[in-house]
Amino acid sequence: MPKVLVTGMSGTGKSTALRALAGRGHRAVDTDTDRWSHWVTLPDGSADRVRREAAMKDLLTGHRDGSLFVAGCKSNQGDFYPLFDRVVLLSAPAAVLMDRGAARTGNPYGKRPEERAAILADLAEVEPLLRATADAEIDATAPLARVVRQLEALARQPAAAAWSAAGLDADAVPRPAGPHHKAAGE
Image (cartoon, rainbow, N blue to C red; front, side, top):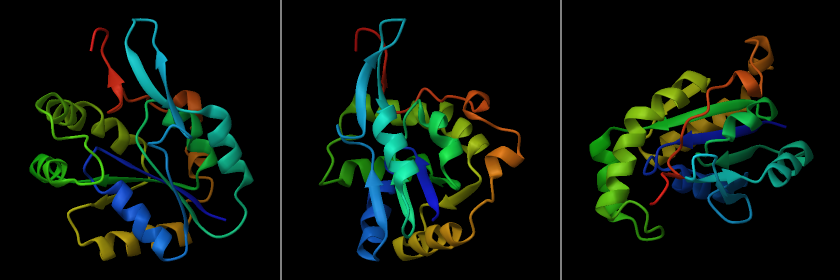
């Protein structure tokens, strides 16, 4: 059964799309929770929120029925790319991300000036890495119903062993710093 990673910058609508997919009967997992992610200290002293390896592997190897959509953007997500059938980037211009961050009600991230600056920095630095490793990109400025239909269509047409066919493995996939990376002292 198809397993699709939905990734992108904060404000692209990953969580909103997942809620809509769940409402249509799909299994949808948002990894921006303590169940799926945790903070680690990097060698340089900075902190990074990464996916929990055991939990993610159990989720992805244990999935058997229907489509599974997993959303989030973490620096270690490339470690799990070989376990996904598709990696889909949701993208939107900076102005859209800023507007969505300011208007959010269910998630406070993106309202404070330092968070907004981090989103813009990630858009410039991280999104190109995500784009280079995604096998599909969806314009997240489209109406939600269209984004959801596109995600469902991609799930129905898995990139048959796209990572293997491209000669990629987890070690070959660039590791973005990710929107959850904190420099030492932050």
